[in-house]
Amino acid sequence: MRKALVAGNWKMNGTRASTGELCKGIADGMAALGGVDVLVCPPSILISTAATALANSGVMIGGQDLDTNPGGAFTGQTSAEMLLDAGCKDVIVGHSERRQFYGDTDVLVAEKTQVALDAGLIPIVCLGESQAEREGGVTEEIVGRQLNAVLDKVGIAAFSSAVIAYEPVWAIGTGLTASPEQAQDVHAFIRRMLADKDQSVADQCRILYGGSMKPGNAVELISKPDIDGGLIGGAALASEDFLGICSAA
Ligand code: PEP
Image: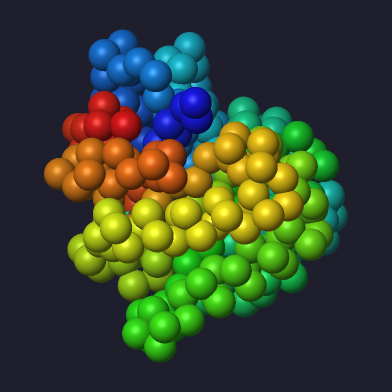
């Protein structure tokens, strides 16, 4: 049985003060939760603030991205070692905003996944099609291409620990959510791709849904057989909403 994972992607939001409040709200709600792993991914500059505020709460901390280089003259970037040192266990790679605004290609996402794994970080590999791609009927082609790029680089065994997040781009931050059936279809497709290479890895790998998940739609989505939790953007910025999703999971 796969344990559900709910991960909050705070994106470029927060100050030390607001992060402290958000963390307190989440930490206070943790006692009422069971059977779910909870992770928050603050902006790099707030990771230490969150790690301090969430110490001993059971909430894990992750990064939102990482550089492929171990260190040096790479202005503005964050290395795997820095994330680990700040208290991260996980790191998001290939988020659609990275792919769309910062030129993260399939090849770069695969390299980032490898660097994360080599460093001992758990990558959360994001996959998803645009609105035009869904309307064009090529969702599986796009998601399959994105996943194959990573599988070719890191191999199937990596997915016994690595996490996948299916995030239809048209549902991210738009208020539009994939229907539970639409999401389940793509999750099942992803799991079949993994199973074609290794059934036991496919059975173990957690596949999260992301795209306007809220407390009101989380139960329906997460109760689908191949949806193992959520990657949450907007609703992760309010502790009651985030905890509502955790409790649904
Ligand atoms: C995300 O950015 O990963 C995301 C799922 O955002 P939202 O929940 O706001 O759609």
